Length: 295
Image (cartoon, rainbow, N blue to C red; front, side, top):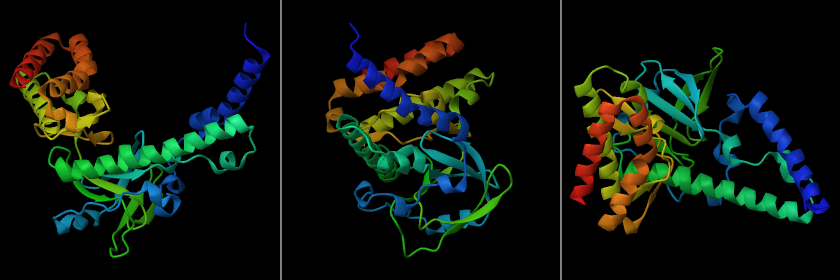
């Protein structure tokens, strides 16, 4: 039987969820006040340091406006005027509990749930985004197209960038005060695979698998399996454009674990490819089989 107590808990949960659903449907759009700033981030969520680019000329990229392009799962994406670079600014709403919910009086059992939810968001911010981007920059920079990161406050720099939203409203942002990522602009892999050129398609498949093998050989796992959207193409080079779920795992030193990681990382892409391009799917399977044999 469905007890009265469970029914009450369910009703409370639905009532608490409604504001989030309403916010997601109506208000979850870009605005400058949604950009995450360091002052809003608990210090324990920040990495000890942010890796620095060896190429000090990267700040010349900022001598042009960046235009709002899209909103990803954890960041707002801007494209440079010359359309060669991407600037990612983190969405604070992705990682923070609304202030009204923090202050709302709740029954003890729901207060415990709220505390766990807040801790989970802070852990996600640190491990799956800040730490992941830092790892990619240090160990996997060329294969991700990363140019510069700002994951900790930098009082020594004076880098500012002009942003323009989709309504043409401009605003200057001081990059010393916000977490940011600058990356080469790439075209989504699944869009490039629509090009009716089998040799080009095969070259992209080679590049995708080689990119994954390179990462796995460095003992780095990727928890995000959305290959079609997370990989991009610059010319005929395939890069990982969303390195937000990477982490080091020493168990990948074992061949059996490397093989398993490669299979897991490609399982959904394999299904997509089988449905949309069976000939390329067969080529992909042969490429994967050859890579697995190397293990």
